[in-house]
Length: 473
Ligand code: F0G
Image (cartoon, rainbow, N blue to C red; front, top):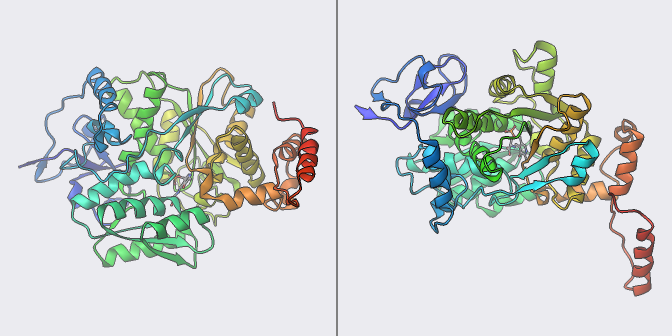
């Protein structure tokens, strides 16, 4: 009898299944739910309703917390790629590969944790940090951490083709890792609704890039047809191995905070997988005694792409109410999120919140993060915009420690930034909803480029006129 390092467990009906037995769309055949990876030491292993015939999970021996901490630090000094990776350095808690020393890695993870002093002051918070998943990750977004994990599984299982539907970052990450592994990749993206930085990446890394005349949700429909017909490995976030990589920033964060646990984590929500993945990471750390409690995980959506918020408002999060999504934060332009249930479970079990933010609020928050010298893509800035709402409503208080997850690099979507500063991004009706204070901030933050003759005096005059404007405190 084979001894399995892990099993898949349906997050809805708790049915267990052997990893190789999962359907190509990673849906539970009994209830249509999504899987999560469980290990013999997982807290949920006991609740799994059916054990998989032909496999046994070995006896439970909990990994030792102090030994893990020591090992993870020790690996930092290694020159091996598998140790330098901010995902595989934690491989003891994601034993998903038969050959764990040889993943498909681009030394992902190891992302910086910045403080945001000006935003903290403006919000009256003592402690506000941003974990920037767009910096340090090889393709400039948090998707790399999940992709190294799931693509390594695809490679080990001998797939020739991998595929995803994407708003741009998953496709960039998949294309890069597939190229590294020598696999063929195909990306389905909504035509005209993807940032140029991301589109250019999938071409650069050699993927077959198909822009379909539909939205993200339409791309997912076609992809599901495709994987039914051909042996293509699906790398969307319904793939449970993606979450195994995407949980590791939680480990990294706790290390960076010297074992402190913040009270709040705030993520932007699109297909709704990321908050749940981080929640899994924190849950596992708690279970293994690496942390004493779990932070609240809150999810922020754009007003125009708010199925999670609508579902909470209309039925307490019991059933998904899909929407026709529209937001300039194209990464989260998703109306029917696959991981809706996982996200609801995460928010409920951690005591987190949801908030929705307008286009104007996202643009302002992005400019504020840029003005702190950090920058991020629009979807990431939804976190700061949402945090303002959660502080205003009293859900987050001044002494609580907050970490925003900035998911993508500012260079992913330079067109958005340029349009904002040139004043052509927001329509009048969108600005009409801004408060006087917000309008004042917009005016201070906007730095449109000036076109001048090649004349020193003209440059000096411009500098002088700028000196009249105070730098934001
Ligand atoms: N932020 C960025 C920059 C993203 O690219 C995404 C998702 C999210 C936030 C939302 O994360 O889906 O886990 O809730 N992008 C996907 C993609 C959908 O195809 O790149 P989520």
